[in-house]
Each structure stands twice: as structure tokens, then as C-alpha cells.
Length: 499
Image (tube, rainbow, N blue to C red; front, side):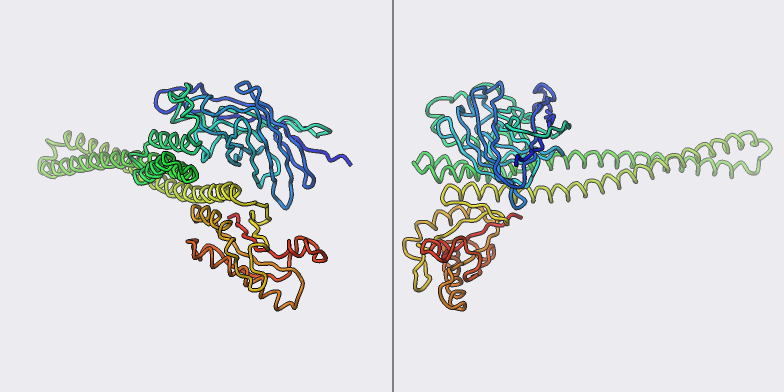
């Protein structure tokens, strides 16, 4: 049976602002692309074609939709280093955008020569895929420099036209289309993480981090300095880890700077309104003083009413006018006070929403970064709760369930990545085959899970970020009728939970 694929013809409008102060990046721009609805079962092959900036670049992706998640495995070819497209760029990022305008950073491509591979997961079912050049991997909005975008899949497809809008980043704090001055062989040898960290710190400072986020930009600069020192000392793995840490810290400094700058603008606006209220109150007080003076004059002239009747009427009229003006000004003061209260309520609501959004984005970035970093030191598999790393039977003593001495060589790289991502929770789950008594099987699976938990805690992983359980012969991954199947079923899984 031919599966019909719903392909949404989308107009993706990238809203571009002016570059930093007086620079203009060319205004808003629109792109025409395709958002694809992926079927719930089966594997779909999708091609990505290069744009006019990189016409030779190409990519192929295999997309699988299962258990409420969409898994993407994509491979790039005929790519050039991002810094050759302009001094603003150091890397490439894969994006997903939905017809509702939601965008998601799905991960960074690390080039090996002119090629790169990436595995990513998203909760979206209908979305367009495209790849942009970016200043660093931790950006939250795509740039206008689109390198590749998906094209219609081959075979029968149901087309539906719609408009899709999302807010893109036109480079508010950077606009340099020239090649870097240091675009030399030595520059090309530097890790992408160092180049991205340097650019992320520059962007954060242009956003006012030296004024609004001194502590955070200081942390980013310290991590960057350590990354450079590690690179110069020949420790490239540490340099890359520290570079990514500096990027995350610089991006946080930029976000904090923008939020605090906006809060300062609102506070200045409220201060101006308060000053206007104070001026009106002083004017009202002056009018009331004049009224008192006029009333005093009326009392003084009471005895000579006949002679002062004309003056009395004039003074009474002036007093009535002043009272009317006082009522008007009191109404204006009441209106300004109500506007001030509403502004304060909006500021409080906006700050709470930004805190919640920033927390969710930070957790998502940390989870995605952990998945990518673990993929470099261990085999990562998708899981309905997030993703997992499987520790095989060969790492454990068959009699006691304790870790073999050789297991440390495989666990230490995993521990290093876990310590660098302290906010992602996970569970340690032990499993066995079905040979033996149920109570003994359950105890053996618990012993193995406990051995891994003890190793992680002793290596520096916080004990309160994970739980440990043994499940006996439950959830087999292979048949227990063969030796190979029983060996595969004896395992410990580290399952990392999406928040």
C-alpha cells in the first residue's frame, strides 16, 4: 500500500530587524519552503537542496515517526567551513519549523572535511527542515543565511497550501559579511567550539553583557580562556568541552542582558510617569493654595460687600474655574496611577513568563547537548522517555554482578559528560535473562544497577539526580532461547529523561 504523505506548502517569513545600533541588515525577508507531515510508521527519505549561497551542498535524511517522536538521521556533503561565508559564522545548525511558527534547534553539524552526520529527535509531526550558518551552536533563532532546505519527497503526496510565519534572527548584534582576518590554515585548525565561543562572547558584549550581566560574561570569558589554554597545550577534548561551556554561558549572558535592558526601559518609562504624576500633584497644590487665598480675600471683603460685589463675583468665578481644573487634574492623576499599576502588572507577568520560558529552553538545550556529547563516547538509542545508553553484560562479573576493572575505561568518558550536564535527570535500570529463580534474577539485576550507581557517585555524579532499580528478566530485548539473546538481555540501561 502506498502511504500518502501530507506535505504542507509553507511560506516561512523570517522577520529581520536592524543590525545593532544604526546598521541595517536589509529588512525582513521571506522564504518559500515545505513543511512535511510524517506518517506514524515506516521510514521516509527526504532530500535537502543547497540554496544560491551554497548550490553544491546537498543532504539526505531518513525520518522515522514512532512513539510520539520524530527521529531524524541526516548526512551532509560538499560543505565548506561556515566562516568562509562571513565572519559572523562558525558552524551549521539543523532547524525544524512548524506551520504554527514554532522553531526548534535540532542540533549542530561538526564537519569532517566537507561532510557531517547528525542524529536528532523532535516532538513535532509536521515541520520543515532547513540548515543555517550560525555564530555558535546554542542559538535559539535561525539566522537568515539558509544553506539547505528540504524539497518535496518523491512519490504520491497530498499538497495543501498554507502560510507559516516565524521570527528569525537577522543579526541584531552582528553584521559582518567579510571573511575573518585570520582565515588561514592555523585558523582552520582551531576547534569549532573555540571559534563559536569567541563569537558568542562578542555578541553577548554587544548586547550589553558588560553592563547587565557582568558575572555571567565573566564566567564565559573564564571558560574560553581555559579552552584556549587547553588547545595550546594539546588537550583538544578538554578544549572542545570548555568551548561549548563558554558558548552556553555567553548565550545566557546575552539573554540576561536583553531582559535586563528591557526591564530598565520599562522602569525608566514608569519613572517618567511617576514624575508626571508628581508635577501634576504640585500644580494641584498650587491651585488649592490660590483657592485658599481667594477665599481669604472673600472673607476680608465680606464687610464691604456692596463695594466689593463685583470683585467677589470675579473671585468666585476664578475659584470655580480653578476647582474645575483641580477635578480634571485629579482625574488625570487617577488615570496615570492606573496606567502605572497596569504597567507594573505587565512587567511582573512578563518577567514570570520569561523565567519559565528561559528555564524550559535551558533544560531542552542541556538535554540536547547531553545527547550529542554522549553520542561521541557511547552508543545512544532512542527511548520513549528520552534516550538511553546500554552497558552490556561483558562489563559485569557473572557471579557477583560487580563491575569488572576494565569497565572503568568505558564509564569514565560517560561520567565526564554527565558532570558537565548536571541538570538532566536519569535512571539506572538493571535487567537479566530468565535463567534461574525469579527472586535470584531480580537480586542479580539490582546488584548490577547498584554497582553502576556506586561507580557514578564515587566518580562525582550527584546522587540526587538519578534513581536505581532492578527489573529482573522484564523487558527482554532478544529471545532467551539463544546464548546471544540471553547475553543481550543481561544489561544495565542509563535512561535520560526529557523534562
